[in-house]
Image 1 (tube, rainbow, N blue to C red):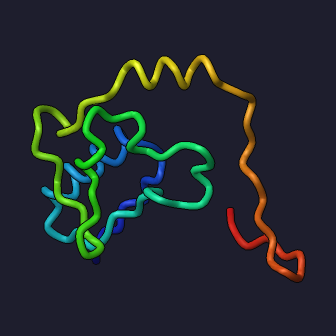
Image 2 (cartoon, rainbow, N blue to C red):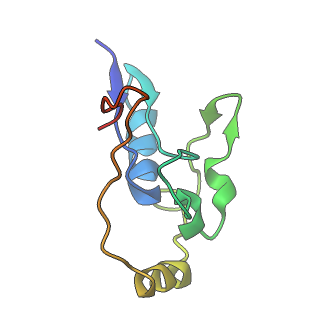
Length: 103
C-alpha cells in the first residue's frame, strides 16, 4: 500500500508532514493548500521568514533542510495576523447546478 498524506493546514503541519514523508518508504504524494483558491488574502508561506522553502519545482517541493522541521516561522507576521483575526467559517462552493462541489 502507498501513503498519501493529507495536510493542507498550514506551514508547520506541511513541514512536519514532509519530514515524515522523507522517512516513509511507501510515500506516494503530499497534499497541500499552497496556492489554493480558498486561501483568500493570505498564503501559507506568508508566515515564514523564507517562503521559498516550499517553492514548487515541476510539481515537487524539496524536503526543508534547515534545523528542526526546516522552516522558520515569522513570528511578527503571525502576531499581525492574530490582530486582524475575524470569525470565519469555510465558504461552500457550488457548481452551476447548485450542487456542493467541495468539503
